[in-house]
Length: 71
Figure 1: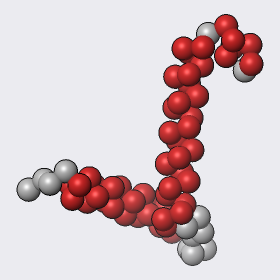
Figure 2: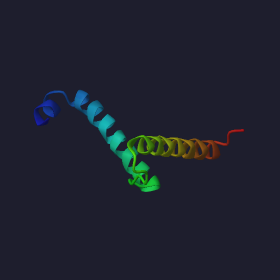
Figure 3: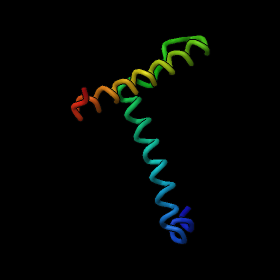
């Protein structure tokens, strides 16, 4: 990675920026909704995780809507 950064700084920057965005999103998601799932069965865990993602995305949409004064 160090060689890649030295030889191609622009390519490295784009790749790292994508990773930093993903890490920031995961961190925000876990801070807001927690990292634990209460369901015991895997299909219910999957459903619970999907609902957490929907809730997180709705929260972001409402926040964006309020900040930018949408109708």
